[in-house]
Image 1: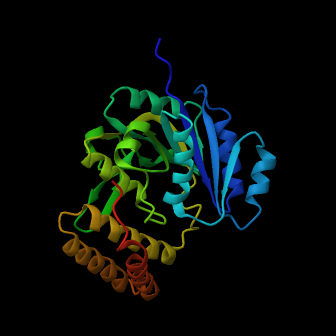
Image 2 (image 1 turned 180 degrees about the horizontal axis):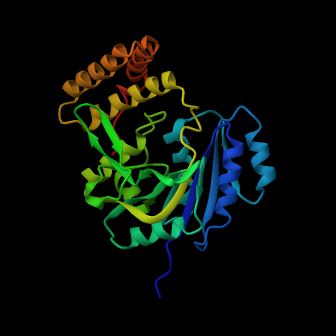
Amino acid sequence: MTSLPKVWCVVLNWNGADYTIECLTALTSCTYPGLKVIVIDNGSTDDSVSRIKVAYPEILLLHNQKNLGFAGGNNVGIRYALERGADSVWLLNNDTKPAPDALSALVAKASSDDRIGAVASICYYADAPSTVQAWGGSRVNLWIGYSGLSRVPREDDWFDSLNGTSILVRRSALEDVGLLDEAFFVYWEDTEFCLRLRKKGWRIAAASDSRVLHKVSASTGGNKNWLDRLETASLLRVLKLHSPAPALASVIFLAVRFSRRLLRLEFSRCGSVWQGIQEYQQRHAGAPQIR
């Protein structure tokens, strides 16, 4: 009888103990046998670490001394899991509530084809549980820097990228293409990772029976200026690494981004886009591609 894959779940926390504790509570109902959970605290400046330890002393918690961003923080957990024999790693946002069988559905989908490198859950709005927030993932336009999450069922070959809110990644895929690109601080690192997977011949997929409730924008509070700055920086790196014409695509992307905000007289957001360009130049432009 074939043994089930050994899965580690990585939950990243940054000043979000309430969300993380709710997520860990949901994981206690997980029906997948032998799941191991690790919380990575990403340099929280509040009392997150102590609160999580009190609520779940039996769960391993590693504390980063500073905020390494989404990619860097998750990579700490991924490395830890792989060093301890994980066959797959489940990256799960802390602002989620996975259904008890969500992981079992992810593993079943991944096990259906050895060339599936990553599988995403179907995410529903936490405050509207019957409404799909993201059905697996998205298509990506590498000319204008646009990605639209699907809200309806899709065949696996439709996806260019998966939604990183809840994603199971196979060990052999990580060993082949590398971990998340730490040149990204937050946003679009899941897209870049999936594009890298597909370039190396791996398939990506969605598990239609893997249900996860998601509190959207819990970490940002819907701050559009902050989003504009970070997304601009990250998207410019995605275009640099994966667009067929990076320079032209970057010009088109920025022209569209500035124009939309100017037409709506959102001048502060134009300033945030400019800050994103500067952040890209400082953080991303010279960073090597993960191979």
